[in-house]
Structures are given as C-alpha cells and as structure tokens.
Image (cartoon, rainbow, N blue to C red; front, side):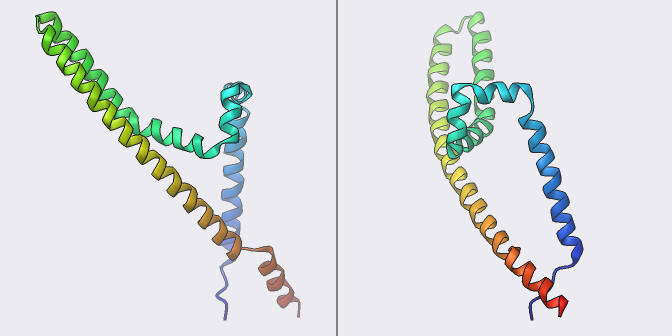
Length: 146
C-alpha cells in the first residue's frame, strides 16, 4: 500500500547532496573565509548560528534603505552648496529618524524571518529524515529478497 518512489529520485537527491557538499567545501576552503572564521567574531558567529542568520537577513534586507538614505544625504549635500543649509539639516535629521525607524522594523522582521527559516528547516529536515529513513530502506530491501 505504500507508494514507492522512482529510483531516479534517490539518485537525483544524492547528486544534489554531492553538489551542495562541493559548494560548501569550496566556500569553507576559501582563504578569506578561513581567516574570518579564525577571528573572534567568526568563532562567536560559528557558535551562534541563529544570530548569524539574523545578521545575514538583516544585512540583505537593509541594503536598499541604507542606499536610499545615502543618496538622500548626497543630494541634500549638493543642495546645501546652493544655499539651503537649514533645509539640509532638517532633511538629514528627518531622514536619519526615518532610517532609524525603518532599520528597527527591519531588525524585528529579520528576527521573525530567521525564526521562520529555522523552524521550516527543522520541520523539513525532520520530515525528510522520517520519509527517507534507513529503517524504511532496509525493510524495503529485505522485502525484495523474499
């Protein structure tokens, strides 16, 4: 009654696992990565993967608002050369406050996204381990021998 998977699915999963392993090995053998991982910050982040994922998500999500803010600063600085010094201070102050609010919101959102990613990973990993467990393969192989 158990629906059997085609044998090609197992081979595809093994090929995908091999490719991912090669990619991880090439990243971990990079000299800059090795130097960073030997630093105190790298060792701390290695011991705290949730914090590392949160920082990575935060950096990726906050790149656009920071870029827009820097563009705003450059444009208002150019306007200051024309003579709008008070307006520049006001705009930079408002922009800084807005950036602070946006980054605080993105930080909170990064925590939520990281938590969701970690929980999803754990659930999918558990399901894959349950579905493709060695116990099932041994039962399947022993039934073929009979």
